[in-house]
Image 1 (tube, helix red, strand yellow):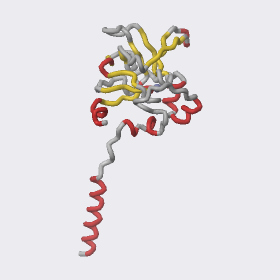
Image 2 (cartoon, helix red, strand yellow):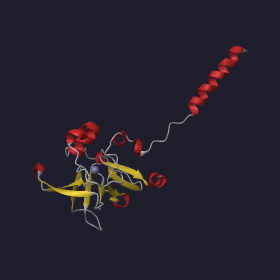
Image 3 (cartoon, helix red, strand yellow):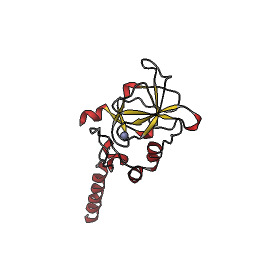
Image 4 (tube, protein in one colour):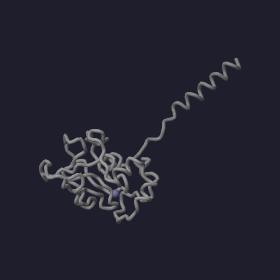
Length: 178
Ligand SMILES: [Zn+2]
């Protein structure tokens, strides 16, 4: 009898431990942003952080694209085919960049927007690879986001061709909770 009771006790303990759910993950738990002292979704003060410092903070893939202007392979980005409602922020510093309303289905292989947050983005001339392009960077931290072209849809005719790796999406439902 004692043995049966102890078996039952062990089983109930095990069941309890199975019932316990892991805490819901939020974007503030994002490993890229959690340990980043410069990350803020409210502070738009210009950052002047050297790449030697960013290299210590950012994952290698984010560093290569955001700080060394690398490009993710077309069709591989997590936001390439993605139509949730919400806001897109800079993965490096938390600066607001795009609203999902301005995102459109593009066949180019990267997430594309017809309009950017003018307070969030800045532009540089890019003559690399024998092409004349306009690079889009984060206005706060100067991270590389992608390029902008004039072959987009109405109403702007502009196509912001972005790297998913440089972006962090936060859904409207999550923003409403804060
Ligand atoms: Zn930034």
